[in-house]
Amino acid sequence: SIEHSQTSYDAGGELHADAIRLSLTGTAGDVWMQTVYNGSGTVSRSLDVIYEYVGEGEGEYSYDPQTGQYYADPDGDYIILYQPGAAGDVVTKGSLETTLSASGTSSGVSSVLRLSASNSSDRKKSLLLYGAFDTSEEGGYSLDISPWFRWETGLLRRLSFSGRLRNERISYSGAGLRENRFWSVRAAPELSPADILVIECSAKLWREEEELYYPRDTRGVRLEIDPTLEPFPGLKPGIMTAFESRREVVSGLDKYMIEAEPHLSWIGGGWNATARISAGYIPGDDELPAWFFDGNDSGISWRTSVRIGKSLSSGLNISLFYWGRRPSGSSWNQRAGLEGTVNF
Image 1 (cartoon, rainbow, N blue to C red):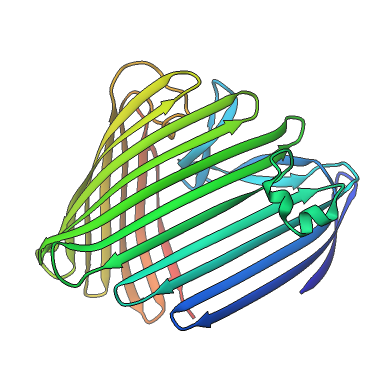
Image 2 (image 1 turned 135 degrees about the vertical axis):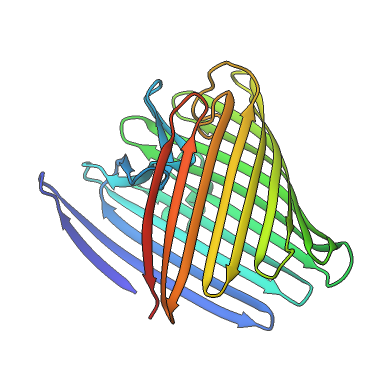
């Protein structure tokens, strides 16, 4: 597909853009592949980064009033948006996403490769995507790969691995180029010592490096075990326990967290319900930077969620939910509501 768009702003100015999109999907036996390519030219160079409030716990970022910075938080209140700035150069952008998966009865693998490049002076560098590997320019690359194995009998029923590699550069208006480098590896065996008991385990090792105003080099390891019973069909109680250690090399900050999360799920008679409550403990009484442990401070932090749903008819579902979070030393953030979904 080929597109042309023109946008006018109330404050004055216009934005013109041309774009091309190519998509290819195919299968060969047990292998499935999809490739999507996008190329565009936009009359604008700078990029303004905007954090938009979307509700308590609905976003991916939180705000730290002490430093005036936003930080990644899976239970945050903000999402990040990128708005073209006011400069008049033509920026050429290119991106490619390729998904490849293969699966059989006892094993499989899935992978996703992403490339992106942006340049205002060399169109070919962006459109052919080799600018994705130039660390002095906006763009980046990422690779996710996840092989798995499955057995019908024995103690070990499933074994999966996952690896991620990412290098991302974003040009912030007035602040320069922000570079983020990340890698992680994870192993997750699933054990079944009895017909009514499943034990999910995982071990993850990761490292993240950031550079904008000053460098950060954070390294972490997380160990997790989650035994779940099914004493009756549809009823699954369990408790997840975890140990996670994080260390920021530049500042020398080094902390660990112990976490416990009882959970319960039930399905039956057209009803479904899930409930979980999580407590995370970080030893010490010193105040931690908000970005270091996903907004958690020293002491005990709490999270809880409950959802009860009912299938009223074919395609019509209604559910009641509650979500709450209390970081150590802070008050509760809570929300509740009633949702309805219709499938056509």
